[in-house]
Image (cartoon, rainbow, N blue to C red; front, side):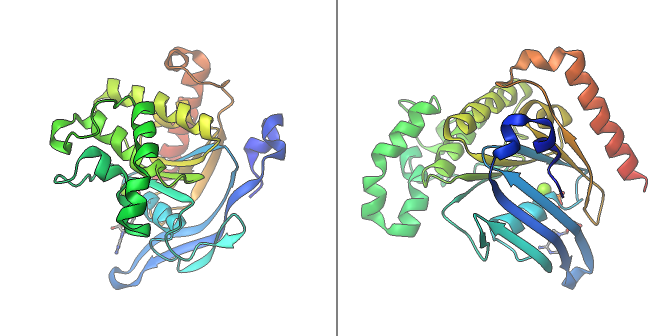
Amino acid sequence: MSNAAQKNDPAAQHARPVYVLRGVNKFYARRGVHALDDVNLTLAEGSFSSVIGASGCGKSTLLKIMAGLTPPSSGSVMLEGRPVMGPRDDIGMMFQQATLFPWRTVLENIVLPIEIRDGKKAAQAAHGRARDLLSMAGLNGFEQAYPNELSGGMAQRAAICRMLVSEPSVLLLDEPFSALDELTRDFMNMELQRICRERNATAFLVTHSIQEAVILSDVVYVMSPRPGRFVEEVVIDLPRPRTLEMMTTPQFGALVDRIRSHLDEGAFT
Ligand code: ADP
Ligand code: MG
């Protein structure tokens, strides 16, 4: 698929393709489910893309395939020119639930990926970096707190820090803020934008909020109900950095309407 974002955005025209998916299919044989149908996707370096679709259409399956957590039934997934065969250091993932271990402090939770990969000594050495991340995420003073002492938004911010501690260049986000109240969610989305811009990270977000997809993304992919396939690719040409005020503009409203109409179409074909 030629990337429509690149046609519209002169700055993106020379952006390097980072992720390339070709003809990705997924069948869950045991339950006879055809979850994904011929998904093609190219993510340019530093871009922010979202996939939106009804519950059960295959969004999480797609993300798991991209992360190397489950193989495609057919098709190819390349990241930085190498096939994704399993979990990789250059991929950071985040889920709806923060899944912090309750018996570990915030700091210990954040360095856990390093500890699993390289052992306790390396985890200890990463404390400085973890503290920097916590301060970036506004969690100064909570290093020694336990997860049950954090609000939902704070726990998700800690989960962002844990995702970033291994310095991934690609972020795969599966409805990371959907369990939060709306105000916190808006705030977290702006934080996410800031973090991605600072690191020139390539981000791919699964969401079922049209507003969230539009405010964050360069491109929104609309997925049909099962088997999931992309039925539309909507380029979001709002200027950057995005602000919450943009959500009240006619341009924003028109983009939301356009995506909603594609979702409705998809539901009846
Ligand atoms: P979404 O994230 O869009 O809600 P999923 O990717 O989780 O959708 O699921 C897509 C379809 O695949 C659903 O019908 C779901 O029941 C099925 N599915 C997901 N994971 C598995 C699995 N491990 N085994 C069998 N079926 C699965
Ligand atoms: Mg899901």
